[in-house]
Image (cartoon, rainbow, N blue to C red; front, side):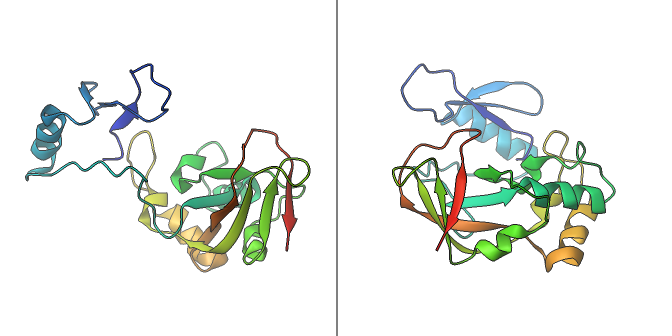
Length: 183
């Protein structure tokens, strides 16, 4: 499924995908029987496609990781920053901190990340460390497996990289926005 790419064709206000591009480059409407048949055929048994309006997540609705963590895992796994694609970690929010300390996010558990200036921006309560699964081993473009990435996360930080959180105040998130850590 990693190589199936969702995308939007409809010019609606919603930014949700409406179509899917298969690994072979064919395009199907997201809810079509043709897509279901394609996936069933590729994987050798019947599948049912479901529309989950609120998404599906591992432990919490938001996953946050720092660039310091991603770059450190890349370096220590021998992959190099360019080869250890950020998408392997599937974060909703990526934060560039003032230092390059890996796994700084662990210290954020129980605290609140506040986005933007003042008290009007979004706020996220950090609830727990993000224990990683085998998905970090897969190249997001080729689906090639490289277990060195997960082995590195296990060795360096007890299989945790990034944190989970919940929204405590809705607001806009933008690239380059100031993020502060509160109690």
